[in-house]
Length: 554
Image 1 (cartoon, rainbow, N blue to C red):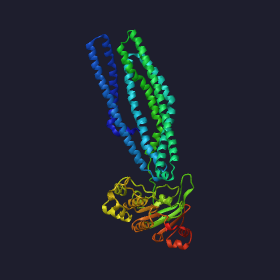
Image 2 (image 1 turned 120 degrees about the horizontal axis):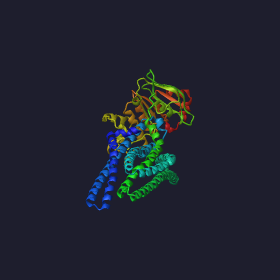
Image 3 (image 1 turned 60 degrees about the vertical axis):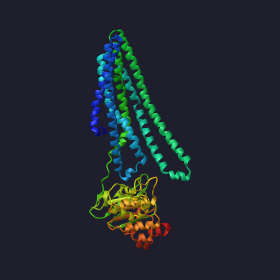
Image 4 (image 1 turned 90 degrees about the vertical axis):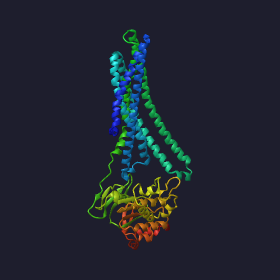
């Protein structure tokens, strides 16, 4: 992930330059304390004034250097977060449907929000700090060594003792960081799940039950955060104790050297100021490296997303039809959802996929659309097909974005008003759009929302506007009244240059007679196929399904 530093090359380069300059300014500022104290003790006023002005000058330069380092660091971290989020977001959107469904939306939100924040702080910022701390150690060590080798040895000993602490605490910090990240992801996912079921909770009056669920996971998450903070602070607390020991021993040793006439009082103050630059890095570098190591699982999780590449293994045949051969598919932990389905689908033809719930209709539709990956068998697509353009799948549950009706249909693409008007007519949306105060430009959200049937027709309009060669529809009229459903299906069946595969529970005789072929799925297998009249005359599975259908389905 180090390449994210180089996304902002100039700022990163400035940071690499500012850090050593800032460290040198800090050294000179610390050394400027000596003449101030020594001239004050000697009573030499002019020399004291000159030394004080020099100290002020170096102090200002040190402060400016520190500000420059931090401002460039903030810019680098902002750039890292922006680019990492964009890359993760782009990669997640490139997932196929089956890969996307391996995690819930809450997990992806947690990755984009929580995990990116953790990586920015505990990985990228920590790496920048390692560079800064190493420079601080080098210049401080050289300065203190030149002033007092004896005190330098004492400082190194204290620093080496402090090295043991991160080594002891490192594994525990890693485990706690993993647990805390997992808890936060679980919290977001669970709360989203509860809020998505808001209406169910209200209607069933189950506030207390879900409040207890929230309380439980909230306490678990924050308790995990407390333990994480406590362990991090314990390591810091040990470092503070080492700093106390360093200051005391430096002052005591320096005092003896002053009494022996080998050092001035001002020099003690300068060395005390410099000693932090020697001991602190010996504590900080291992701590920072442990911090970087502790987020390795999070970094690997994000890296796995970033490295994802869509499956481009769509097999094209030499024919102009779509052919399924011995197609099988199973859901994880369940029996097979589809068993050895063999079937050909021809251009411009209209197919109805019917059957009881759980018979495999939607599974077959998703496999044809490329949402799922087959377990066995093969799908041969027409040689002229470009999947991203020529195959469009419309699910039963349509997401409506909180934007205008126009943008919900066009999804940001440019279409003429004539094209939009024609699609609105085909989807029976004209009256609804005209009823909105701003028509197509009305924003859907809190003030104006749409029903399930209107949402389904918006989803259908999105698909028709793109003129695919193959349109796969999964219960797209399930939320419509019978009159509107019949009109929408008739409009679909009138599409001359489009292959349509319609998954449906509705068995309206007038509509069924217009399909070129009806495919009956049963227990994951293709049980029967044919035109409506033929299937009714055979008096087999389709006949029984039709006879037992409710009036609402007809």
